[in-house]
Image (cartoon, rainbow, N blue to C red; front, side):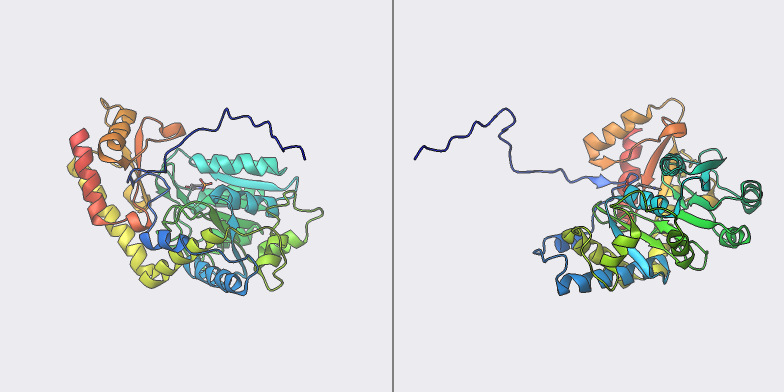
Length: 381
Ligand SMILES: *Cc1c(COP(=O)(O)O)cnc(C)c1O
């Protein structure tokens, strides 16, 4: 027999060392450091995605997500992907071509919603505010009255600005104008008071790597009966196969039909992250985030710096700190990373060069981290 020979191109066959990653303190807009118990959960051996053990894990993840979001929505699942995947899932399922979608744009992620909604054929209208400000009920009322949209989309916690959109009364307005309320809760889930059902939110999404302190890779998604009704009334199929929630729901619901292979290990991690939320309790967790943020805000003022967002609308999970006139934002961020292993990046878009973004999220929301950052910042400045 002729010996088997292969013609292999070895150009990219690099010799690499075992992975060594520096111990960073991630105090930016996400990811935040993973809780040690979550990293431990990731080390568990794999089971199949239809194994009864995994199905029980799926049920627990769904219930714990409902608790964390304060919703009883049946369709509450982690989408396989990062926050943007669940963001896209809300629009892919709810938007039909030609639907009017009103989007509040007061930061980077409002613009991302505009881009995505347009790709699904929405007739997009925007309500704009300077970055760092929030929308009042009267302006929302006037815009809903003017545009009569099928969907109003807002960002609860704008990670690019540090502003928290007040939600009281918005759900009632949306019912008055017969439109769905879609909410980005990526930087609020597990860190900032959030009551989906009480607020009348019809569709929401989040991420795992912000206030849940889990690695990125899964994205919580939920929709209520009003949103499901709209999905069921669609004339055509959801234009995105992977994110079609009517199909994903039959894997996560009672039928358990295969759709795609769930990222098993990431679900172990999310389960542990949500267990930590349930152990601590939402009230205690929200209070902890608030207290550590206040500690940071006091420290910032003591350093002669100021916050970009008015205190009443400031997010506990993310603070934008104004860069003083004679300081180069980027070189401060670079020095913090290089000399102190602290990640604290600058602003985006309208706020580029004007602010730093400081995340005190989940496991990282601790007084010792606040002190470490303030000391380092003091030295660098
Ligand atoms: C991080 C973030 C997203 C996007 O999530 P990815 O996990 O980066 O895809 C969306 N909205 C907000 C408000 C965010 O902070």
